[in-house]
Image 1 (spheres, rainbow, N blue to C red):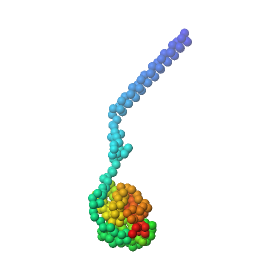
Image 2: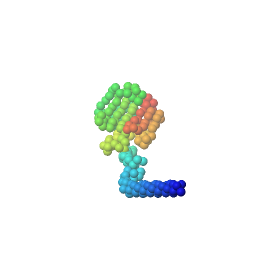
Image 3: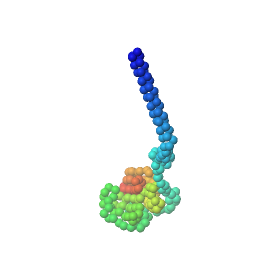
Image 4: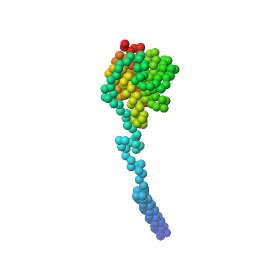
Length: 219
């Protein structure tokens, strides 16, 4: 009888404990569901999460600034009449570039030989230079990029036009093509064109340079 009562009591206690635990689990589940519902309903959506990349943006949504490329009216420039000059006719070449602003007689040429640099712009303006040495004639000017100001682009364009004229004076119509190729990103090395030996001709990194080997020029 005592065993029966004990068994009955133990069974009753076990059932009661089970029901209590079940009730606790039900309450916990209900509480979790209510919290999840509140989070999904009330949580604000970040604008940054909703940004989708576009053709003008990076993967992180940042808009890139590409600027406006510089254009060169080569078709019109090629219609201008030019008088041929010899590569050693420095005064005539400089006259095409304009007025010499300053002269540096302690400069160096392409191969680090003593040379004279003629500057046609002030130090605060996009540069336009002629470097003359015993072996080389070098034309150099500022090569504007798409993000430059309109004024810088216009000055760069004006420099390119003068270099285009000098190139045609020295190499004829082939010289005009050389400048056109340079402005289109081509690099020319060690080529004989239009009676001149081109050591290097290129436009990149804000700079254009046309370097001619005077000793190899055809006369």
